[in-house]
Amino acid sequence: MTLSANISMAVSNWLLLVIIAKVFGDHQLGEVALSLSVLSPLFLLASFKLRTLLITDTQNEYQISQYFHARLLANNLLLLLTPLLCWTLLDGINATVVMLIALYKWCDSWFELTISVLHRQKAFTSAGLWIFARALCTALALICAFWFEDVLLTLTLWVSVTAMFALLSTFNCRRQVSTVFNQTFSLALFQAQALRRSLFLFRKYRTLSMALMFSSLFIYLPNLFLQHLQGISEAGRFAAVSYFLVAGSMLITSISQTAQPYLSQLQAQQQFRTLWIAAFKLCLSGLAIGLMALLLVCWLGPRLLALIYHQGMTDMSAELNWIMAAAMVRYGYIFLGTTLNAFRLFQVQTRIALAGTLTVAVACLLLVPGSGTLGAAQAMFMATCVEMVLYLVYLLRRHNLAKEEVR
Image 1: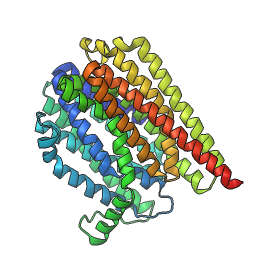
Image 2: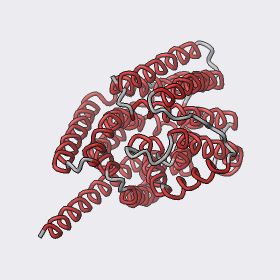
Image 3: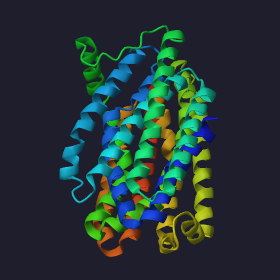
């Protein structure tokens, strides 16, 4: 259920880009894509990956409401800073578009945390129903907005549905925390003790949030390079094509979310052999999904781009092939990060994600001026290869050290 629900959520969000591309054109598509390119990494930085921490907190180190307090504090601060971002990083982009997307990211991250409470209970069917209902309502709202041909109305409806589900899921979460976990759900934002605990959470897990931000910059950094070197429209076109990778990542993430409690439980029980066998199978499944996606776009790439967006996007088929090659590599090693989460080895992921971000930045700097969007796609592929090699080197080194300790 979780898998199908996350697929439906990916499709409903993809529908936003499809409508903007078909109705409003590449420039407004670029405005939305660039706003997401700046705000998404920042909201991930502010998330401190509390979703994963909440799920893997099998020893009840913190009250559940403490995770929500920390999320509320960080997200509110970032929302207050959004006008400054409009002035500095997003100059030339419609400020209303930026603010609407900031509100969406706030509500989306809050909804995600409420769903994590259900994942911690292993109530995956209930979590899937919530996600599926939100996806369905989002799709219906966007289809209605399609007839009005107003981009701000389209974004407003998109945000409104997300806000409604964030509110409804909060009420459900509060009930779950009380009845299932026998805890009090309190969001006293300026309570001194809660503030101290949230600040401690931020300090303790800042490397984890940086890993998330660096990982997302792998997707969004090429858009920013394209904006400065090729213009807003080219950045929008590339973002639309790269969403094939993003949609697939949501599929992989849904599998990861389902597997995370199981892997954490195996780690807590010190069943390491079973854990690594499960991790290996997950990596193979991710690689297989990526390979099938790559073969599909190599065969039907131009037709898919014309069908989903518009005929003018067919000249981006080479970029799509490189992006899906990067996706295949990425889907193969993403579960290694999930496994390291079970061991709470967050600093390793931060270093690897930073290396990937630096790779994509340097590659874009070298390739985008001469090759444009194709160079950006090739930069993404290079970054995934670097990250994969680093994961393998770390795991081999860890395995050899473990063997020496046994001796």
